Amino acid sequence: MAESKARNTDERYSKLTIGVCPDQWGVWFPNDDKQIHWETALDEMAEAGFSVMETGPFGYFPKDAGRLKEEMDKRGFRVVAGTGWGILHKPEAWADTEKTFREIAETHAAVGAEYIVHLPPLFRDDKTWEFTDDRTLSTEAWNAYIENADRLGRIMKEDYGLQMVLHPHGDSHIETPEDIDRIFQATDPDYVGFCLDTGHVVYGGGDPVE
Image (tube, rainbow, N blue to C red; front, side, top):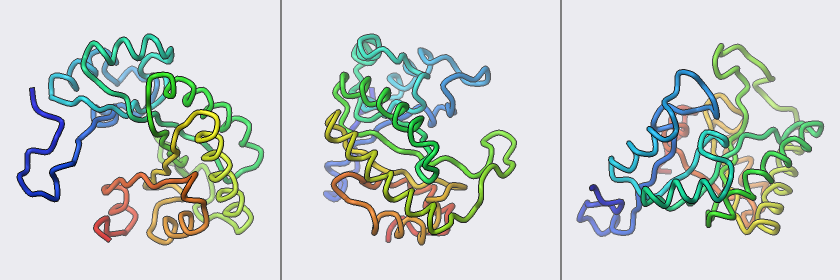
């Protein structure tokens, strides 16, 4: 079985751990007939040599913490993060976002995760690619985004012991270098960390090395 530690002898990479998440297996949704079964995905991930897991769309793997831990343990996985989508720039969506993230956090705190990844919702439909929201946020919407990002991150840390990290994403409101700078300059780093996805940064016109 391949090791989870980088095998590059360059000292810069000696502490690098390579993890896995379901989207690397073509999984974007909790349920979709075109996706492979979660047990098949887990078995293949383990066979490929991975041992560190971000669980991806909540509900693809078992939601019950006991069952999730059992399935991960028997394949040698350590769960480090859960993932959720949630609208932060619309005040009327806050209750649903909080409820969703509390459910995800409860499960993942119970299995020893350290992080919860916030994926910003797309302004396009993820299947038809039609626009579903304004591409550019108003000042009022940006202020709500910033306030609610801090608010959600505080809840995750204080109530569940999880560090929330925000994942910039193509075709979302946190996409371009300017978007990324704006949100992280304005939020509290104690509550809102940065989940770097180099592919999405490049897609948004940025340079991940910078």
